[in-house]
Image (cartoon, rainbow, N blue to C red):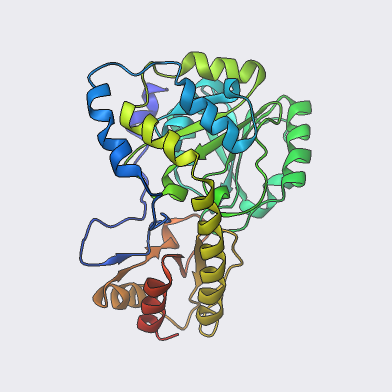
Length: 336
């Protein structure tokens, strides 16, 4: 990390509400969790009196089987954010150039700056048209947050090959890819894939995730990761969740059906961006005031995400896809 950056880099706004009296549509978290988590979590108390086994063998195996990769390619981390910090610290040096999509997850730019590198903002749907030459790392988010569209895997693999030819590392954030049936690009040479257990399994406070990378870059990431960097409860519950394949399939079906229903109704009033993700980006236009919509929703018991904090967005809101009943209540409250 570049110590001089600490005086200029600020924290990034996020969705999420701690108010128990509202339904939170501002954070893109699965409202459902897999069965059996409580006894698995409780069973870790005694084991937490010892340091975790630093090889995390069972977790690596579960993650590798989930993606169809090898356990040696899995680098356990305490959530995708910790994975991003690890990847950037290994790959970047002060003065390096990093392409970041816009609008997209604001932490990319912040973490790049903390390493003393320079973020270069590129429209999210034009990143794959970027010439990798002259850049040290390029970030792709699929499905992109907050716009929601996924990049076809064959296009990503083609771009990854161009990055390899240019000596540029490609980091692909697949935090929301679990909500689709699209294949991961994990295992692509020279590419780091970032995965989260937060979103699909509805456990943001658990702080568990992993990077996927092979070859020399995978070895360097595994060498640099913190010893005992993921807690025993997180690694044990994470392993349990990664083996709940039917839960993931049911979630994909529910999100797809509800996303279509919400899009249809919201589109009667506003422009809704096509999405493959468990959220929708809504442009309320110039005739409606985003602040009034946010306030009205809050008064009626719902929290939406003000997407104007994302680069290149002005009259936009982001709305998560939750349970059918909750979605229906929100749509009625919004008058659509």
